[in-house]
Image (cartoon, rainbow, N blue to C red; front, side, top):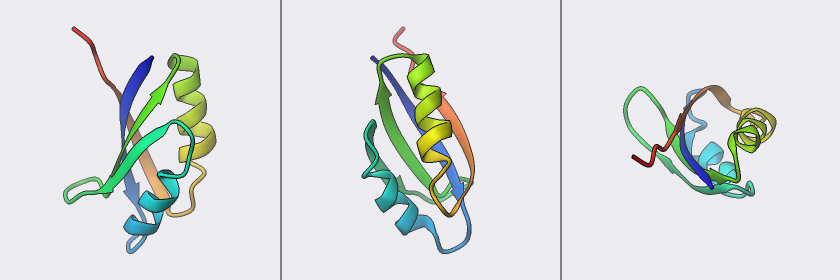
Length: 77
């Protein structure tokens, strides 16, 4: 399994609704509103890198209110 954090910037005032909608997407383990340069951080888990791309591009970035994402795969060193 491949786990990753997806750092998300939203339009102003869309943080909570975006986090709530993300939490309903299969593969999203959790989504929280944060302070700083990003507005929401989602933790996701997928079987492989291709599925991670499909999840982020096909489902997460499709959520209304999201402006930009940055995907950070978790390394197991």
